[in-house]
Structures are given as structure tokens and as C-alpha cells.
Image (cartoon, rainbow, N blue to C red; front, side):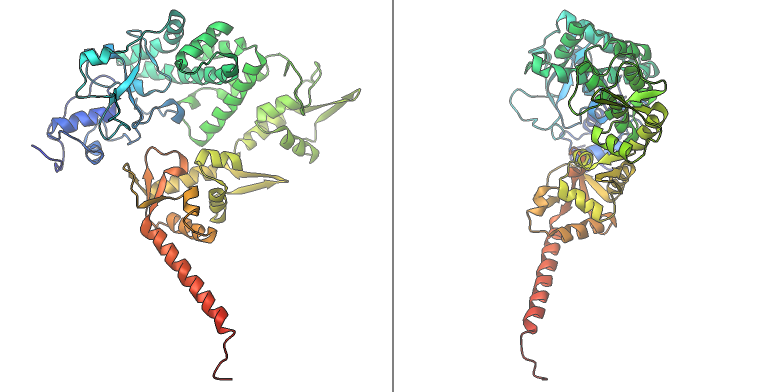
Length: 502
């Protein structure tokens, strides 16, 4: 059996091994059916024919039951293939857990994962020097350059990941999924804390991320036990004011992300954990911050300070002050001591405002989440896809409209992997460099969302930068523009010519 013209169900169906990554498993099935050099089209043709892969998507995300993973926690399938040489020597299959972004050390063999494997076509840059193919690599090549973590890093990684990996190896998926949300949550908190240490020498360039985070945990005596109680204990341990600020900001971001796209982190009481950090009795902040109002030590019962309210809501101080000035908080308490003014807001009203504000996003958030510029943002507004909310001088958009845009684009688009020179980005500065006027861009978007213009989705591009349309549609826009310009020019010249009828 040879060639890539095999149709129907695969005749040979190897069993899926423990924690085997679906993408490389599909390649293994394809090769077992006689296709020596599989293509991505073969991968997608075989995917719906196997019970173990029918529910998977071509994004390469690990699948454990119905556990939805945050996008930032996963390595997409076009990235390098990471592996533990000891595990791969024992059984030649790629594990799903190695596709978790924060999983960097094998806790079974205490070896740092390597990343020099590639699957042809699927892995970007598979022809680079020093890259080995999954099907051709030898045991000796697997072990070249292998390293073990230092004792402090090993303790930190084992504390976080050992229980999860052991459950996966024992095929105890429910136990593993019980630990995974807590692990990812702790990892993102440590990742936020690391941003404050970037200027202090704790994150030197070239040092693995897990090494740097282990050093920070050891420096500040932070414990990382993957459980709800362990998370609460870590929050109680955070005493450095800079760490508290970045953790609060990260928690606010996670709350917003989960409202937009629920994942396994939604199983955690994130809002309660954030309130726990805010209401732990410590003064906020330890040092004055310019432009913010700071409360005295005696805060009225049932009230929070202006600054704590802004942190809890997740808005800017200017926007909160605008709400106060426009009587959004009629029960607010204002205190003046000397030349200093203090503002206290009812906690119940602040909580209500937080829930309302979580349904809104700023223009900057839209551009960042969608990876588009202002022109693309205004275009989405013009076709009525972004629900604008104007509050005085502040402009927001309904968060639900972002989800609606993504869903509609996924419904009308077709996935593709190989870049085609005849495709143009739907939302990119390059589209405005092709002499397409803003009104033409609006027309293209209207046809796209009406299903009248075919578009294609690149599976690895982020946000709306993943969507492309064909060149003939662009040529058609140019033709219509030229015809319109010729018609207007003719009408203008005709007004200045003498008519034979007069």
C-alpha cells in the first residue's frame, strides 16, 4: 500500500498508548497504513475516523476528558516537540503532558525536557540544524545535551507537578484533572511575581523559566502546594507590595479571560481568592502612589477605600472618579483630614460594579486580544459587530460581542495550514496598503459575515490575524473602485460639456 490516496476507514489502527499526544498518534496511524511521508491533509482526513481522535481539533491541545485548557498554558502543534529522553527511550511516543507550557521538568526521571524533535510538515523549522525527526532519532541522540535541574528547582517542580504526572502515568485521569487547575493557577501567579523581579536579576536571559521561578520561591519562602488550601496559603504568604499588586492584576485578568472563554480554571473560586488577598487586613499600599487616594487606618465597616475599590473593580482611578462624580455611589463617604481627602465606597456597590465592569472591555483590550489595529477596530464597529458603550468620555465594548465575532468567523471560515501567496490578511495593516479604501474594507467585512465571501483560517495565527481572503476578491474590489472612479469622472466632465439639445 503506497501513496496518499487511501480513502475510508484506516485498516490498521494501533492502540493509543498512555498519555499519547493525539497529533503524533495520528501520524503513527497514517504510517501504519502505508503512507511513509504523511501530509497535514492526511492528518485531518484520518482525524474523524478514529474514536480516540474524533473529538480533537487541529490546534494540538492536549485532551484529557472534557478539560478545557487556557490558551497560554498550551504549546500549539507547530511548535517544537519537547520530550524527556528517559521516557522516550522507554516508549517511543510523545506524551500529551509535554505540550503543557509550564511543564518543563520530568518529575519521574528528574530531567529537563529537551526540544530538538520534529514531525515533518507539522513542526515549523523541522529542517533546522540539530533537529531530529521523531521517526529517525536514535537513543544516543535523545540523550545528547540532557541536563538535570538543581536541587532547589527540583523541589519546587516536584511540589507542583509530581502528583499530576504520577496520576497521568497511572492513568488516573480524574485525580490528575483535580490537580491541574490548581497547578496552572499557581504557575500563573508565580509568573506574575516574576515580572517584578525581572529588573532585579532574578530572571537572567537564557535561564529556564522553572529555574528562575524556583529561585524566586526560595528567595521569598513561597510554598506551592497544588490545592485550594495551598493557593490560599500562598496568597497569605505574599507580603511584598509589588508582588501583591501584580498578583491582583493577574487575578483580574484571569477573571476576565474566564468570563470570555471558560476553562478548567473556572472550577476555582478566583473571585473569592482575589477578595482574600484584598481583605487580609494589610494596608494598601505600603507606599504612596501618585494620583491615587489613600485611606487612613480606620475604614468604615462595610466600606473599602478608593484605591482598593479600583483594584477590586479592575478599572482605572480616573474612571472610578468619574462614576463617583456622577453619583454612581450615592452612599459614598468623603473624609477630609487637613489637606488630604479620603473616599470610601460601599463594598456591596463595589462588588456590583465589578460584575458590571467585567462585561466591558476597552478599545485597547479589543486590539490586543484580536491582534488588530485601530482601522480594523473601527471597521468592526462600522459593520455593527462591536457593541459600543459610551460612558462620558470613556468608550467600552460589550465583552460578549468579542465572543460573537470569533464564533461567526469560525462558522464561515475554512482552516488551512500552508501559507498561500494569493491570500491576504483580513485584519492587517497590509490590507490597507493595497489601496483599499475604508469603505471597501467595510464592504468586504459585510460580505464575509454574510457568508458571501470565502475566508480561510490559519490554525496557528493569534486572534483575527488568522483570517485571510483570496486575491480574486481583492481584484474585484479594485475593479469596482476603478469603475466607480470612472463613472464619477464622466459625470463631472459631462456637466461642463455643451448639450446638443440646448
